[in-house]
Length: 114
Length: 116
Image 1 (tube, chains in turn blue, green):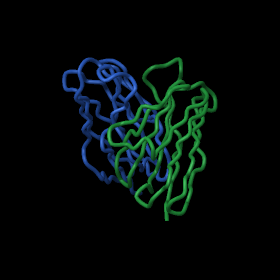
Image 2 (cartoon, chains in turn purple, cyan):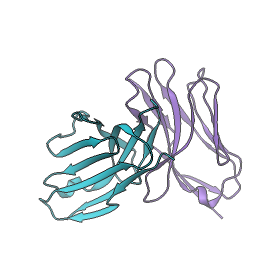
Image 3 (tube, helix red, strand yellow):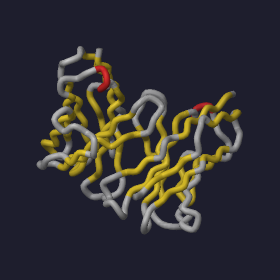
Image 4 (cartoon, chains in turn yellow, brown):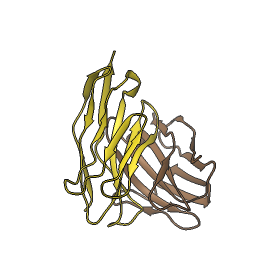
């Protein structure tokens, strides 16, 4: 079945450091890929998405490229801020298994220090 | 746009009582809503999928008689935790899918349930 694997956290960085959170997936066909962010005590917010191979999703300085050949969707940001501290979830949906079920990775906690 | 609300945001109840959580899509019609459960420092676990006007589809291992889901309109779904026990304490998150879209879900802010 479909699955998502994320790098284990926590990831601890200093402000203005470069961020990479690795995400790989297993799925048949061409799923849509997402990164969600969860701030403490809150629900999930969609950060960015990509729906086909080679698409690059970007938002708030974060970006991720849908790589079909490596089945990856790594999240990157050139210069993190303290306010980026949160838990980041990589996820996919469809096509096998239907478009109902979002499959989440385990989440990666990011802590950014001044 | 695409705002989903949940009420209440926090609830504390005694063991044996029932608790209802509401999930509303505020500015769009949601034919499908989803209920997730999240344990501390863990990922989200899909509990059930509800379609407006029909019975919910529960994931394997989720007790449908304990977690009652009603999706009575295109903007409202409710989750009722019946005869709650301390092990039901968790963070419950709903999401909604726009009737016009097929692969994006919009999430509510979550409800923290604590059963004493």
